[in-house]
Length: 303
Image: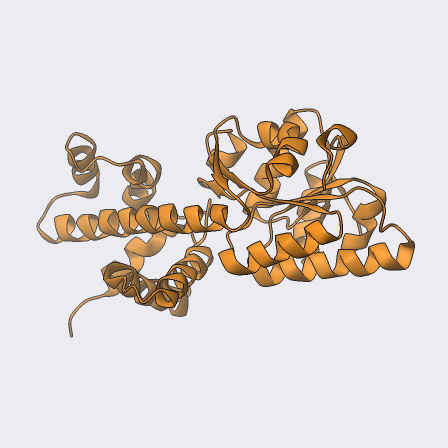
């Protein structure tokens, strides 16, 4: 079993996945006094990370020599499992199987696969803590995102200083797998709020209400929401530089539908939302901010 007293996160941390979330996490951790060493399969992401003043490494296994705690911010569970497999093979090859290692997974993934992975790693003496964040990359960087934590209590406690550095707002939701479940359920509501806001913009404009006037109406009425506060101005301006991406949320919605299907539950709004997101990706908007779902709704005109 993990011994919290025998483990302290190193001041150098590994960050695997240097996209919007990974870079925001590195910013938070650096501000808290940690040094971040990053890795990504994309050369462009590595260059951008280095240009921001961080250190990079050539392969995930190199992080085993740099840190005893790694933060994972990869796209999906396939990515998490691939990173873990590479680390396990390297630990065996380099004779590091007895070295302490903690993995903090900030991705949004498949709850059942993550629970199974946590059990597998626990048997090897590796701590695995789920820590997905509810919020955009900008909110993560500002410390305004909510961190959902799950895992064996002693493992969550062992990496508490790193979790505190990432976000002062944390909610413990149980053992591994539960954070992904909680994130999917809350993301469902958030995504539909964005889509509803975008549809309201389109209807309002079709009736002669300007986008700016409509946003003011929403913010002054019971229709007000965090989605309107975070994405309303982007929709008004039609500027969609990504803080979170349409293709990323499309992946999450597919996970929601898959989890619901396993229990025989139908999610009618999410099923429609998934189709809308897919059409947005097919139209070339997958890399834009989630607020750009407005563009797809604008395209959804009857012949």
